[in-house]
Length: 280
Image (tube, rainbow, N blue to C red):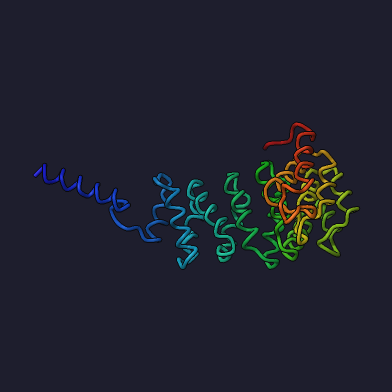
């Protein structure tokens, strides 16, 4: 009997190996995956997350993500926030649950919640956007970087709603000043950008870095230069990294960043800027 069991196990292992099978006690349904992810001690979380993502991306109802977002476990919530960020607009129906997470003490959860809300909110979500916009002053650098991306990528009405509501929520703050500067248009002039990059508030300077990188068909190098010339460590770093990765400046031949003089210019600015910035 023992020999038969061993032979059977060996045969299964051989067939699994040669045919690329993975042995599971049962084939997991999308709901099984969510139930597994609700366990803070679950194993194989990475694979579970991406398998669940593929089902959400197809036809698995997004409402099934809600239990992860409202869990009492930060470990579980972080999984839900990550999925919401990756799903973007598909997470639109869960905007209220995601919005709660932008003030979470866990920096990773805040980071992914802001990323999700960048994609799934509209100008109709003014209150949420106003609170999100105030994370330009977040104590953690990674979250501040995420906010620069929000300023870069938000649609004009979405950004306008964020600024307007932040100013309303904190009328005696830098947000009221930003709102006044952009009351007529979401586009800044060179003069306005120069004024913002020299502002005493770090949050305004970061906002200026995001505005300098807002798409105008392609990035206008003059605006990026204004930020880089300040030598202000964090805004310069964020602008520089954009040109090292994906921002396409006017002078880029055939849209290739490496053919732009600003790519090397931004590397130089990063080296020459102040050596330290708040890491959070």
